[in-house]
Length: 308
Image (cartoon, rainbow, N blue to C red; front, top):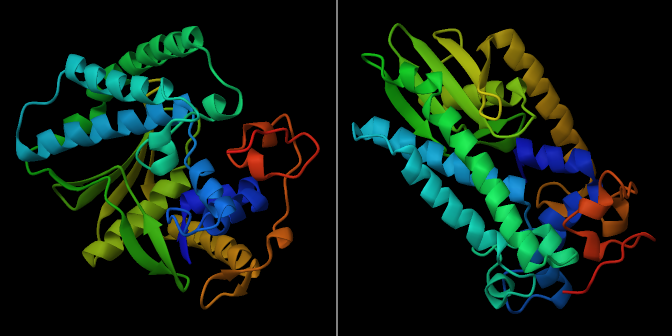
């Protein structure tokens, strides 16, 4: 078992969703898997317009960072917009029965609404326009972010760009994927997390900082490390200095999450889960279940979903 912030968040949302995502779908990429396992694997890759917009903007941020690190000209707003528009349009216009998605859902995601409810052509085109407008606003905020001012400082260096870092924390493999890590002169470091929605968690970025320092073989006490949440949706920056005391609190929360995950295993050594019924099912049709990607595998009275 490997721990990550996203894995912990999924468990907090619904144990049954957590089970299907990590265990019920395991092996579903194989033609030899059972039909149900293949279905769970496809469903775990359903997406939403906002999620796809966020992923596209994160890719644009990585492209800007690569250009800065290589000393190349930064991409223009028009270039960023053209790429994001093409990516979003491809996903939004893909149907719920698309054979490419059925064959390889990781490479050809389908919208949750397209799979479960269906979306007419007019609605899809309107959604493309709406997402395109939002992308333009996010790209503008991205290009004008103070992150690039910091990266342009003499002696500044970009260390990581959206790269998974694997460390062992509280006895388990822990995956941290900072969006950007800058090393500045005078023993200073900045760990950046881009946000395209309304949520954000500085504790997550502090865990990233711990992973970065561990990977570099350093100590949080030896440098000044700042965690930056860059809210592109409102062109604002939320920052906090990472301290050993704050990291202790973050690691304590991770330890509690790991304990909860292990409690749902029959064999923690080999990551063998308890029976599916042991994973409690959320039953809130308004706030969760109706928007859940695993709705087709749900047995509640309101789970009227089509079969794959």
